[in-house]
Length: 172
Image (cartoon, rainbow, N blue to C red):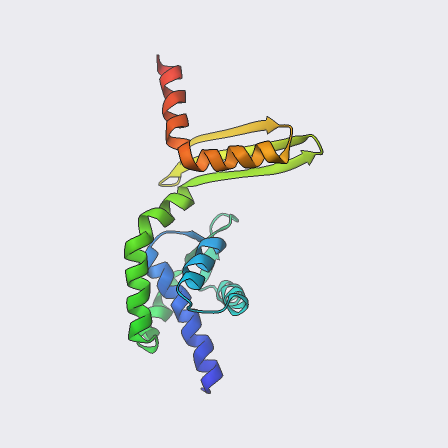
């Protein structure tokens, strides 16, 4: 194996190691953030590696969603070849995950997005998921992209207050 092939293999193992350490599904954006914040792989190569790992069934999308997880094949590959990842990189990933796991998990549980239906109609989709169970899902019809963006941003900051308020109103 030449140097370029070895670098590609190590970079793919780094991605698999991130999945192992996180131990829950991640979005492509989250994988990208972890890799770029730690200067592990350049953006374009990383995108290619994710695609190749998916094509080789080492990672997979969950229910055609935007979340990825690693497969048994990916796990076995990582376990057999983990010694190929430099120790300082392994330690860096472990430390980063230990310090950021709760924040990252929250990002996978709180969703806020919107869809443009027409020039004056946007559907905002807000959701909180815990252990694959939807705790709350709201769909709101608003008249502008600006409103949709504001609602999405506010939801991510105060979803728990909204959820508590709705439960309070419905129970009392």
